[in-house]
Length: 107
Length: 121
Image (cartoon, rainbow over all chains, first blue to last red; front, side):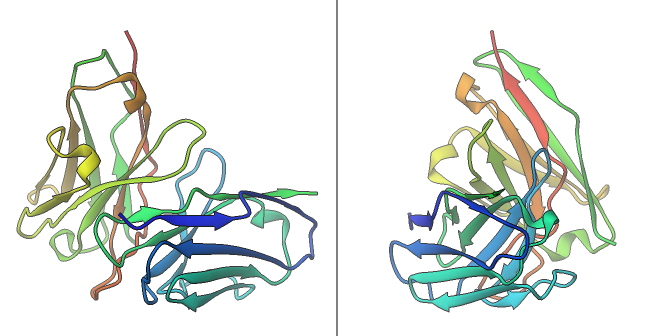
């Protein structure tokens, strides 16, 4: 299986900050990379598909980038509702796999 | 509007089986694969497999092969996931998630609300 490694595992930031979460694949996955947000006690929601496609209804401050093995999710100006856990997911090969998650906390 | 509704929380003893349902509405059920993902308490997301509601074809992650069965009932637009030979580390929230994509990249949107399965003696 392809291993997905996110960094950092946790991150403290303030409202208005710009933050970047990275996701590295153990082998090339082209642009078959998606990002999800999960808030406590809730199901994940899709933010970004195919590395850089913004899901309908998701604010434009969320930007995905990368290809091959290195990917990033950047939030340009943190809002209070953005504090959550973020996961990347590859669909290049079965079995699909997720990163371990990045917990974004308020500083 | 696409909507997924899952069955309620379950408690099982080790060695038993559990069957979770995912009732869909708002789209053509047979037009999109349905995936199952689980999340143990305080842990990350683990993909379990998918079912093609049109054909009934399935693919299971190797971790679950031999213990998981995914089925569907097209008459009521519902997908099911049954996990057998339960162990304590199967305690988790189990999510169904629709795959809206039609190409080679596959993503999950929306997700059901989740079903907590607790395995305890």
